[in-house]
Structures are given as C-alpha cells and as structure tokens.
Amino acid sequence: MADEIKSLEGLKSAVAGATAAAAVSAAATATDAAAPRTAVRDSLGRSYATGKRKNAIARVWIKPGKGKVMVNGKEMAVYFARPVLQMILRQPFTIAGVEGQFDVIATVKGGGLSGQAGAVKHGVSKALQLYEPTLRGALKAAGFLTRDSRVVERKKYGKAKARRSFQFSKR
Image (cartoon, rainbow, N blue to C red; front, side, top):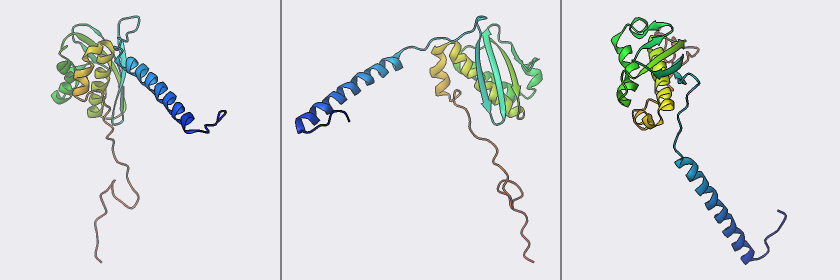
C-alpha cells in the first residue's frame, strides 16, 4: 500500500482503473481461448498420447495408414480376442468418421484386458485430437477424451472385501 486512498473520488478512480485492467486481461484471455488448436506431430508424422483406465496405462502413436492396429507387438484381433474389446478400440475412429485412415501402435501395461482396451481407446482418442484438432468436438461430445476415474475400491479391515462383511453368527 504505497499510495493510500483518502477520499471517495480516489476510491472511485482506483476501482475504475482496476476494472479497466481486468477488462483488458479478460479480452486477452478470450483471444487466447479463441485461437485455433494446432496439430501436434513428431518428425515421423505421428501423434503420441497416453491413455489410462483402471490400472492400465497405454502409450499410443497414430499415423496415417490403412487402419492397422498393433498392441504390444501383436495384431488387435490377436491381443484383444473378444469382439467387445475390439469394438471398444474402434469406437474413436467410428465417432470421428476416420475408420481405416490411421495406423495405431500401442504399448499397454498393467490391469486386465478390459482396462487395457479402455486405456488404448482413451489414448487413441487423445492422439486423434492432437493429430487432427477438428475431430476434438466429436470426441469430446462422445466423452472419449475424459479419463474414466473409476478404480477398484480398497479392502477395509474387519471386512471380507471392500464392503462385504463376514457371515454373521448369532451364537
């Protein structure tokens, strides 16, 4: 407080100056927010993203191609044998309308097959919107860019599982 305000007029001028400065900074942030997103690609023309689901973490690279999906060095149909898991992996491409246009290389660690499929789906969605920012609206509306934060509830002491109690014995 280097300069103290001692009159009502001084207070009014200080408030007016503060609101003008706030308006200028709000206009600056509005132009930053309105700036179009740019594509993020490496020197090989790929986009990289990390996807997570339950305890699974997927590192995903996408590049233009014929729609080939490799997970941990295996074809998608071999690694994810169940059709439901393959459908989960194809969802981002279907929603974005780019089926068969991108090759995917993914490495997944942790969790089970269901969590790993969800992690690859999350990573593919994030990588697609980094490669082609115009697809962000469709992917965001479908909820594919949001990490599903549901994880297994921890076991509590005095309980058989997280909430399951031991069998009650009256006597």
